[in-house]
Image 1 (cartoon, rainbow, N blue to C red):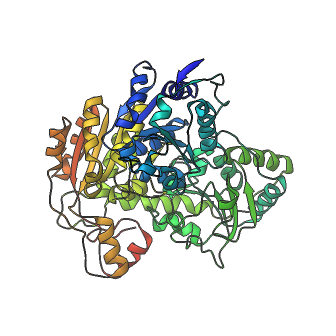
Image 2 (image 1 turned 90 degrees about the vertical axis):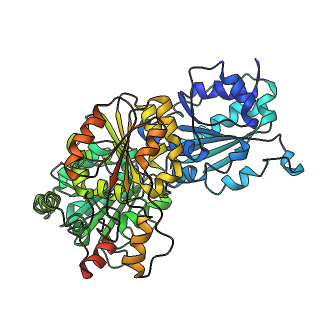
Image 3 (image 1 turned 30 degrees about the vertical axis):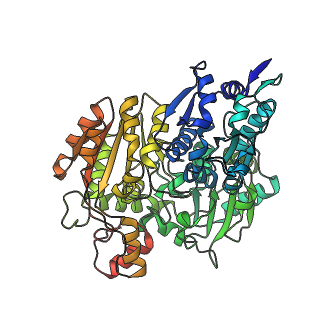
Length: 571
């Protein structure tokens, strides 16, 4: 069958069950778009920035279990980089298509041409160049296969405009089985290592389970809980693993680490004699710079990871389990029953008391100076109103830390979406579009700071145009608060390049056609949130809050400094 490269690409996307693609047009993609007019079953979501498109695809992949797809023209070929890096470091399967000037025309200095593969090869599992239309079926199958195999991640595919236009005879239009979804394969770790891990768990007096993004991606919550209940082990989650288990389960110690971990949760890691990392790359955020637990002279370590490199990367690890979290934990459960092993754990009785203390701290949060809205109060009132079908999308900011720590996720599964693998600003506003596209019947809450809002506020037009049921919450304090907080609490230095002017964010939203509110009185939080939730369409809520030098989020090294300097901090 003879067809153009553009048609081949669309046919292959259809065969891989792709329903949404995020991107925007350019001269180098016009032939592709012309063919797209004949393919209405793949919805193109127009964005205002290629960076936004990549964030949307990444979030879409997280909440669907499918590969997220974005596309960008040659002039904006470098713009998707932050979203692609997040997919790559966060092990989220995405394929970023970029079009280009005709093959080798960049060597003639043709406008907008550059060596895209050289750029993307450093931040993807593979950067693929198509030079002939007839190769597209094979290369697209490869792109999807690479994205979902082993440790998932980002793949880049560069298609010059002449390849889109070229006609070719093709007879290999077929997908790879199961390549449109992830996890693609569920290998079980070596039995010798699982047996060793079981023996270590049985002997431990104060074990702790830590679930990272891999546990959540593997949908291993049931298996984690089964193991925890068998041995009476407390279960904590990193920011990116939040949702692996319900946070109201009796064994949950909620969020741990440097981004939202409170003293009540983190102390279990400080006193553990064994830590079982499940799907965690033991990064600095999840371990508070490798202090929770300490990587020298600390507890015994078991690590289960789909990637053998990350499984024993930062800690001396006695049992290294390389495999899928869900499948391996299921296998271990069978062996535990077969062996008749009993637990020696002694710390389960402490969990209820610690979590009760954590909850008490949110009832009367510490003083919030010179500002009408306390972040904890806002988060707890939002938690009380969350619809059953809802998602919360956050980004690095005061909003993310307080919501991760104090918004208790009652149901198991991916409801809380963050970008704490790389942590670029400008994420939550566009990422919410990816979530809303995947789940149009749900209410999506996007939460971020005003500094981040400036990165991606153009996507409010996307909210308005598509009528998306997204509630964007902007914490306003006229500052890049994280940098200001780090400057004060860690460097003890004068502030430099952190503050900026006040903006009427509600007015900006109104200009984009988005319904908006400002909360000035804390007593209005519930009524405004209720009205926003009941409104079937996009809403922006502007919330004035203190900055991170006035009230400190639960970041361990900040809270240590705050307590020494009498800055409000109650966790």
